[in-house]
Length: 64
Image (tube, rainbow, N blue to C red; front, side, top):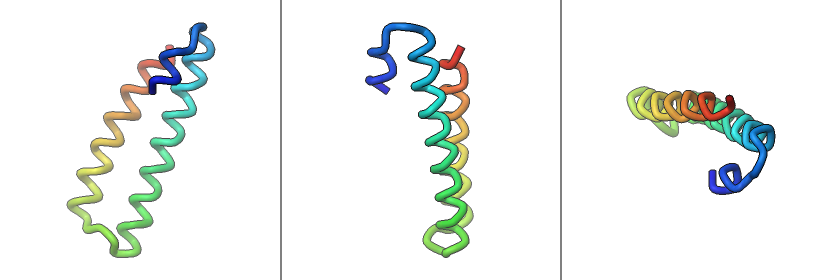
């Protein structure tokens, strides 16, 4: 996040936060696979996914 906030133009910041949001979405998919592979249980997966959802929402608001 520090790199994105150090950018000067709104366009550069928006691009950085958009990339960060895409990465958070990819992390969500990784936890789906971890559940399928039985590395984590359903309760843990849901807890992590809720946190990732909050992060994605925050990043979305920063992309304006």
